[in-house]
Image 1 (cartoon, rainbow, N blue to C red):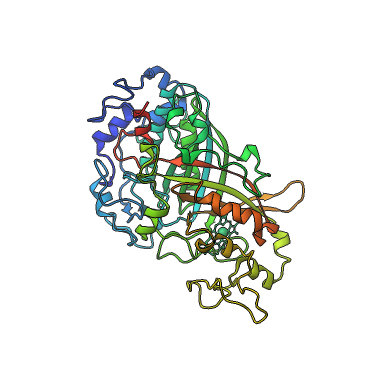
Image 2 (image 1 turned 45 degrees about the horizontal axis):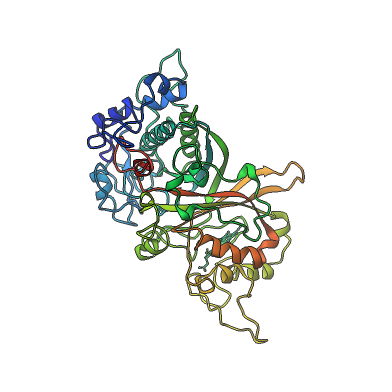
Length: 480
Ligand SMILES: C=CC1=C(C)c2cc3[nH]c(cc4nc(cc5[nH]c(cc1n2)c(C)c5CCC(=O)O)C(CCC(=O)O)=C4C)c(C)c3C=C
Ligand SMILES: [Fe+2]
């Protein structure tokens, strides 16, 4: 067992509850002194709930705690010593379990911490994103779910299955099993709350942050499909193995049975961004390097200014969190592939092979937006993507991009490749950041000829879960 995980005793607390209101020292009351009180019978009413509730201690030894990019070294409470000691940002992997630096399967990103992992964590290769709608109208069910998810996320990110208890042969297995032989593969699970959760169902209307209000009409958004848009809750699972991310989301959706249902989901591959200073810049499906000018995890001033919610928030429970904007952006791949290289490079303002700015220099040379060609026209086209998205054109606005390439195979109607970018960005306020950028891009970007936004949403990702027995957005429920 890793020492960043709860001890057996703490994990046993998760077993009896794994949910809000557990007998965690100092957390005996929730919501005005009363614990959420669904009966054990109700909680144990489905196989899925049983599986989630049967979380038990049990180690999968030999994994290595990965230096985490997004965990404050000052993590409090049960954020373990391993979390704190491994929190030197941007360094390689510690290897207490004997893993080699090339053994990516064994790497663990600590779960407990004051910030959720998966935001400034160096981006992994695979992602599964899920949007869920809550079907129960009982606020206690919602809290139980967020507790179950926290307990499951703690286990999965440490390379453990749903439970170490033996399966009952007469019942469905507690864990679905497809990741039993996998390591953690740097799995991170990031959970967000959508604006629809703050309607009149759960008594949360007064706790809705202004930053989570719908963005209104943005140019180019007319085609967002309702079936691929929004949702009460979201889960972003990222890891360096596709089966690990699928397993995590599948079992979290399974644990939600009776409380929430899957609304839509997306698998992503080949990170289309770079968030770690040491990471090479990956490529999107248009073949361009994507993430050159991204915010890097070790740039603390930039993450403080642009990513993490601070004192400015109107809802204290979001302080230390971040807002996730997702956009499923379909690419007209066949059409793009007929465009000549000069035009492709003009659209982005960078060279295709090296990612160099067309104004000169190499990939990381600052772009010279004032540079003119011999005929007096700007070298970086006025409608190029990099100009329109740049901080220079947007009053200094920046976002942390964390997207993935995706393909859904073939469009059955047209026979074309159904593929593109599952764009994800994190920011302090989507209204003053994403919306500003997307309004400009949606109106004028040369890239618009080759892309269409088809789905997405905004979710408030609360601060991290700091101790076993706690749950996502705990302080939100303390406020009601
Ligand atoms: C609203 C925000 C953005 C959307 C939507 C978006 C879509 C999108 N982007 C690419 C490819 C590239 N984007 C690049 C840079 C870049 N893009 C955004 C924002 C959005 N992109 C920003 C803020 C930036 C950085 C601007 C800067 O500071 O210079 C680049 C260039 C390389 C890089 O810096 O990452 C590429 C390539 C696609 C294909 C796409 C939709 C499908
Ligand atoms: Fe972009």
